[in-house]
Image 1: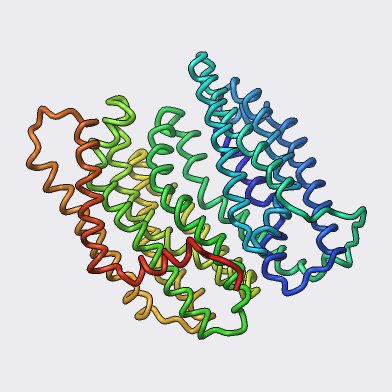
Image 2: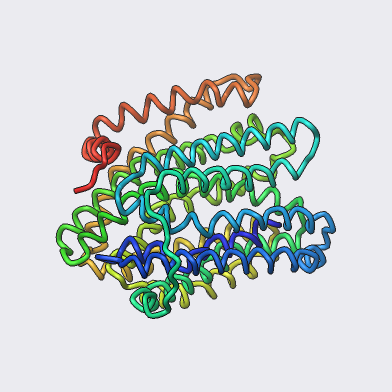
Length: 435
């Protein structure tokens, strides 16, 4: 419940300027310094507003314990202010190793703090620590890694070059936040915290490929796409290769999760989480769709058409929120089902709105995704057959342990035949260096 409130300012913490700096061909020192100080000001204002508004959020949800947790979580916004521009400059220079190092150390520190508090019986405060300690340490390390430092300059005139771009992107992020979090707010308000817990688990697993694969690759290719913004032939070729690579990694992952959703959920999280099983099964197709459609944003941002990105979101957001309300009458499964149905319905128009900007056809995209889709279906079929031959006496956790080498082995064998181009691209991507 608290994270829903802090996600919006975190999502727009740089007001769209980080992507603008990456996309800009030659940002000046005055522009960069002005962006830095504007981000600091926005971070401070956001922190103060959330700290002061925490009691009202608690009253809305009917959870008095939200107030101190939300106030503690608001501190993470203070670190996000100086970090966003510095990280954008590192990404612009292809210094992803420095970013990865900072994020890994931060994640390890946050996890250690969370585990320590959890073992001490501090409950929700362990999750607060996870979301505050990790980003704080990562931000300090990003600052240390960056050689750029701001000047004591703030000029509105220096920001004009980013105004249209960043303004549209910020508005898009706000609408995107609403469409991605309205289901959490509706479920938490109407069905309660327990139902929201089941849904959040399924939603988190659905987003895993989006965050662990698509999000990471998307950050890596945005600078490259920005350099190709005037060469649509090369842009399209690179985009198809990246989409194929992403699908080769995420499609089998989500098919495997769908095939193993019951033993995985019961074995890893416990019998009390059984209501989440059907939600995971419903949302796995959404994970596959979004793992590819998330790259639409890199197209808009790389060629400077965030205005069209905003227009598409203005049309789609009310439809997505309406589907949540419609599905609510059938409980959390109804909300998840409505989300899946609307995601399927909007996938093609969403894709073509972006692909048309670089001359990419739906036929070319379908051809690119066919092989990864076949690989994912093969992995799922193998895992279902494997479960069918196991004795019913085998406990769920053991089923998961035994299924891992089976699924991985089938994937590797299938990948050698179906996914050779994608795997070759992956080897090149992990050695990514400035062109």
